[in-house]
Length: 94
Image (tube, rainbow, N blue to C red; front, side, top):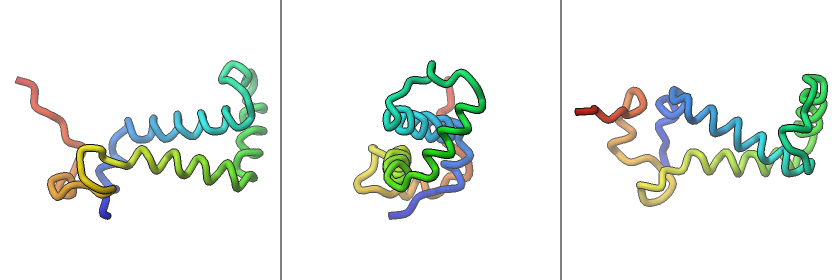
């Protein structure tokens, strides 16, 4: 099981997905919605609570791990082709 971490982490979509998945897990755990966060202080307070909760950290880690799975390959690793990429693959538009 090998991943091309450098290329994956260069892709802004991966960072957006990680943030969204982590936020969704935290909001669900605390029974809140995004609209409940009305101040930066409240965001910091719940971030601190989330980081101190081992169960929630495991839930976030499992959810984030799902982002890295490539459903187009068998198993959990990247294909030989993807391992050779130096940057995220971008299809040429004709």
